[in-house]
Image (cartoon, rainbow over all chains, first blue to last red; front, side):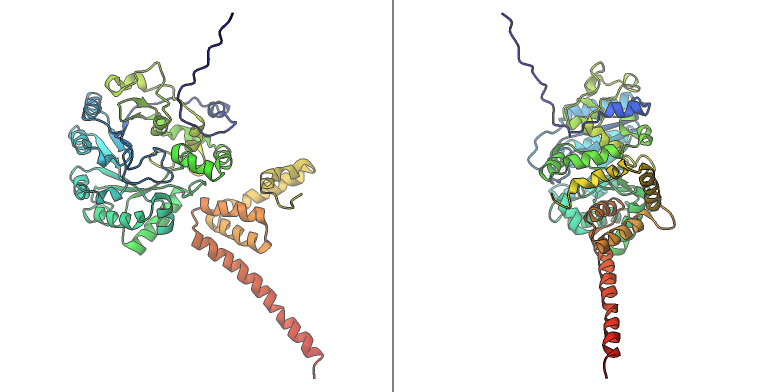
Length: 338
Length: 109
């Protein structure tokens, strides 16, 4: 008598549906996706956030409890020290809500690392966070903040009622301590995400619009605008499905595949660390629980940039989000718009 | 059978099943027209949206609404473009009132 055992599927998070395989698409263009170096550790210190944005790929919100412990923060700092990591890109959630956030920034800066923080602006209104602009200034942190549009309607539609007005106040406070001004050495970058199921416009043209409109309407200055494509995972994927846009959006991403983006993809030069210290090729893979290639060390405590430098990148259908049109990375577009 | 089906927009290339040479020429011309030139892609997308409304083509309205968003236009700008198209359509009808005036005048004492 034979026994048929049930197939146990790993508890993988849902990926968007497309009938085109991402690796086949790369192969058709002669591209093998491997890392080239590791100059950036992108550290996600937790999923707790004071906002619950509709496009959030982290599914972050005030209800989330996943937070990086001090012990794991110490492991990140030890890795940054040991391997002289050039850049620490700190994200969340709202990373400032992690009790060890300021410690991490201070220690990383003391090591001489460049530190950028994905700062949602409104967290400055949370108790105990009022002095964040001064803290950022004193540690010469690069501030990267989401502002999906220069108008209230679009911004609040994506990030929640009242977020736009609070964001303007927060931006003025950053400007007041020197952020965004030429020659201050304090960099304030903004992030544009489409408010819906469409691709971003060319980065240079929308940056010009933002600069003109933010100074004229609100007296606000900033340095660069990054256009980032909405990634079809977690909360944005839920939106796509609920609104009947998943198939159309995925077709759009696949049809807009641009092989010229492959060299600039963020997975080429960063390693992503989750709140438990596990390692991933990017923050998106982290949210899908697609770990780093299994033959490599899996945690920050075992991290060794040499063995990671030319690693094979783990991919999925969501990766079409990074290769569509001008491409998309944590630093915005990666190719001239095709 | 419905006259306008949303999915038909994605089947546009089916037109090329017959006289593919003509369809290819059309597509080459069409795509060249959308490229950045003396006018930006954004301006061209807004023109496309306005013309789509003047023609009242639901496929074109769908396609150019998306193009406008992806070129960085907002709803205020798109609505202004639609008003321009509508106003010109209205003006084009209204100017024919002179024809009516002329016609009446011709037979009036």
